[in-house]
Length: 317
Image 1 (cartoon, rainbow, N blue to C red):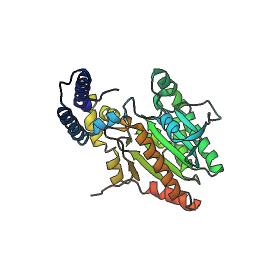
Image 2 (image 1 turned 180 degrees about the horizontal axis):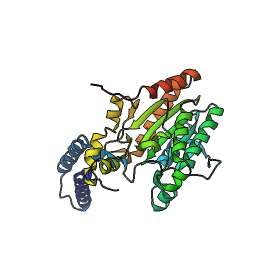
Image 3 (image 1 turned 90 degrees about the horizontal axis):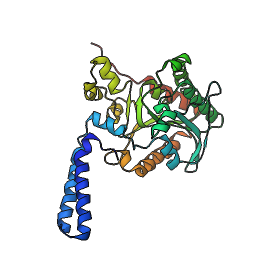
Image 4 (image 1 turned 135 degrees about the vertical axis):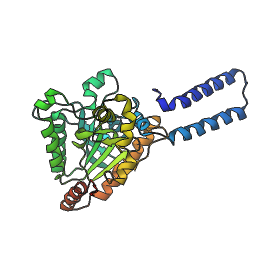
């Protein structure tokens, strides 16, 4: 497993304890009491490190290579998944996965951004950066869900929409704007969960929903910390300062009423116990289905509109 900078002390102590326990199998040099004392020391170290995480540390957790991605949630949280491909205009965009599935006994349209896990899959998924056809595919599937009165679950995990010339030529900005306009008017419940990075319009393009939740160490921001530090200071060394200034983590966004719920992660991040995270996200989705499904559709649309309309606060002097 990849070891993050803030976890190095924990990793070193775990390695030492592992070697001591292995040695003890053949020759009992360490008493059980001494080993238990070391385990308590390890637990205290973990509590100390993970209770004092800085915003940049949490960005590192959010980007951890072993962090669960959309495909993992689909495999471990749903049944009978049937993928739907293509935007009926240009081509299929593998950076966005969409399809019908069951979560428990309920049917959903699942739409999510996928980064890939190794070199081959990352290239296939374009590192989770969708092209315009990806957003068109997502909207096509949402409209299909509306036709059959099926709720939508949107899983956000992207460093941003693809910024290349080819995407701009095919109408990247228009595709995202059209998604925002259309999602605001869809007459079905839309449940949004940020499972990793939620960066810029690339995230918002599938992020207009009736309820928005974030995993504890995910982030949601108008720009990445690197982009922010590059623009403001032209200095990549100030990424950590930018991460703190952007107020992009769940606790800050709850105060600003950008999101509605925080889904806890295991100590150290979702990659330490993915099964716990799958269960938590599944429970949240089922709970929100119960709250949203019986709301009259016109009121659902009006509530969604008002939710986004009131976002943003300013102070005049």
